[in-house]
Image 1 (cartoon, rainbow over the protein chains, first blue to last red):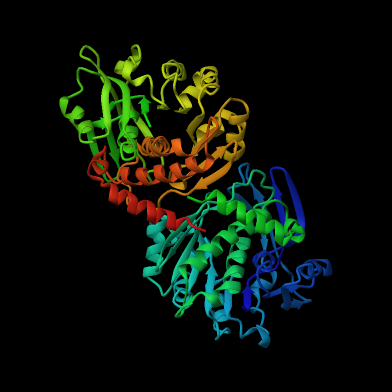
Image 2: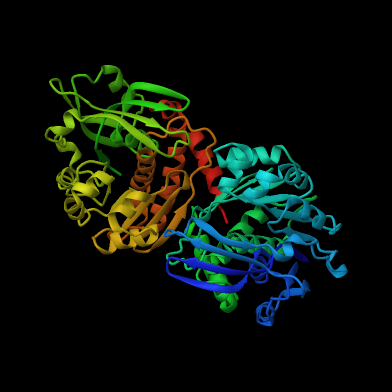
Length: 309
Length: 309
């Protein structure tokens, strides 16, 4: 049941065709934790600088299930900051600036109380850093990593080493192609599994949903048919948060040997899809902050009906 | 139960990154009929020229459920011919040539025996021609039209007139955007319904599946995760054929007043998806010619499992 996430807590400035939000709470750990917290308690491990205002910290406390005792504060450092601008159709964006801050320093320590975590999500960062985090959770039952094009380009060997120790990988459609040179996402995902010790790969396709390739089968899900997208930032992280939160809350009853049931992850992806669909309805965590479990359940039921055959 | 399709029977020359097929049987009616015939008897209405070899006609006879008594032969005319080339990732193509032939002449007559058809599919052609066909089926219970960007650009008023008399419209993602100016396919489909007498719109997204917007709800389906695409020609028409074939075979037991149940069409879209997934495994109708109903049923069951949540 114990879920931990490592990655970034940052300060985002986001510009979309219809509005903007400056210096708001962001980062992969942030979005992941908020989403996962609807399913299970979640602990985050990240570092922030002296510019990380108390008001940002307060946001986490609004979510009763998020444990931020692993959020290290470094008064002399700067928090990771990112600025991005989305294009007209919201399916592509450009980075306006990236201030790495604490990310150029040593990774934060994992609190001793967290090292017994059984479900581990390594949000996007250098695969070498992800691997060093991973090894601090010896009781893990399921570890899943995210990655990005940068690491495929400049740290592919480190990424391959990581994929020999985690169970699952989550990445974007174009990243799967970049990683393998295969234009077909099913073929690409199968190749990534064949060349590693991974049990599964989830290929995220944004508004087109996701593809799930597991040693035990293949599944696909469309995205929720959102009509109004205010800010796509965090869609991938909230998707992963919903997925891992659901797995951590339900895996124990569905385990097959050492492997999480295909069907449990398949259902988890639908939960991730639905949580992410709420997140994109507002800037930063605004929508998740007001989201009620009953709303989440209602949309899940609606979504399940929409994809029923 | 009586399904009729109007549109083209043509001669295709197709070039893909891995091969080519010259002067093979093609056309919207052809692909539609072949797919629909796995579910229900289907009658086609189209015209061909003197260059339409007996061997093309023989192909239809291989499918026991296709009635080609409405395939008019015009010895002094030329058959519609199309040449196309697919780009590397198979998701875009360019037209190499189009020889309209019989399409520039009067549309073929609808045989008297066909006019009692209850399920009508108007494959892509000028919306004025589609409308004149439609009115020859006074007993229709469900009529669905396909269209293309050309008619949206040069015959929008005719298309709008058509959409006040048919029940459903099938079109591509970019056509839905072109038609409405809306970049969101759900919003676009809803607008098309609001501005017409349509009950539903199906937005085809190729490898990303389809979106179904109906007065009674919204549904989505991913595509079947094909790893080897030999020739995408006819994917949209076989999708529509599987959909209409399933509806024609099953509607009678599921009608609500004058409207086909949302759930019947939703299930029909899955059947269309699966038939289309076989069609793209070969040039022209080669794969459908050897397809067994048991293979179709097995892949349908596999697909249903893949999208289960």
